[in-house]
Every structure is written in C-alpha cells, then in structure tokens.
Length: 204
Image (cartoon, rainbow, N blue to C red; front, side):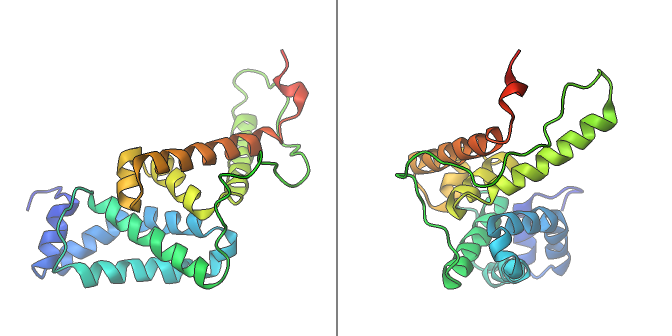
C-alpha cells in the first residue's frame, strides 16, 4: 500500500480484514461527514446527528465485503448513505420539509438583518473578519429554509466539491432534477441573504 492510498485502496484493504484501513478511512472522512449530516438535518433534526453519523459508518462496515466502485467515488457513496439516512429520520419524525418547486416566489421570514456593515477603510481586517463571520451565520440560517433534498444537493456540490453530475448520480437523481434542485436552492439562498441587505447598501 502506498503512503497515500486512495479511498478505494483502503476500502479493499478493509474488506480483506485490515482494521487499520478502516481507521484511516474514518479519520479522513469523519469530520466532513459529521458536518454534512448536521447541516442536512438542520436545527429541526439536530437531536439525530449522532444517530445518523454512527449509522452511516455502521452501513459502511456492513457493506465492506460486497462493496465495489460503481462509477461513484467512495466519498460520494458515503455522503449519499448519510443523506438518505437523514431523510429517513426526518420523515419518520414528521419533520421532512416538502419540496415546493412549484410554489410562488420565496419570501424569507424575520426582520431585516442589521449586520451588513458600512464601508470600512481599506485594510480593516478585524471589521472584515467580523462581517464574514456574521454573514456566515446568516447563510446557515438561510440554509434552514431549504427543503432537505435541495439542501443536500447544494451541500454536496458547493461545500463538498462534488460535480453536479456526481451529486446527481450519488443521490439517485437525474441530472436535470439535480440541476433544478440546485437552481431553486441557490435562488432561495440569494433571496434570503439579499432580503437582509439594506437597499441603500447596494447603491453607488
């Protein structure tokens, strides 16, 4: 085994009985997988994050002897298991948000966010960092408004770096369906973030 084995190499080694290979896979993917599960479940499913995370790895263990690459990277396969388990949990608890792609224009709830800063002098790094931290928190709030199926496509594509084709294949969606869900997600996020931007801030 090379110094930097691929995920496929590690999974094949694990199927052959190498516990160390599984440990390397776990260390490589545990943190991003946990973050992904937490964000797919959102606040309404926050109590189930550990359950879904652990069950995802349990399914990797169960599948080790029959696992084989099938046109999707191990990482795509892993995150797809997690996404499906998250949706199952939300559906079971009655918390799954319905897709509303045929609904009217998205209107965010809440009061206008006052955190958008006035223009700061060039090089004011503390103010810039403070702004981006606040904007990041607002983006996470806006993500809570997305149905889980749209949120999953957005996270896989924009946060985990999967191509849209990979995300679609992993989620068992047609490319155009995945593209549509991503488009709706992006539109909602832009509207949600923009709705908190004072009109004067965008005027030159």
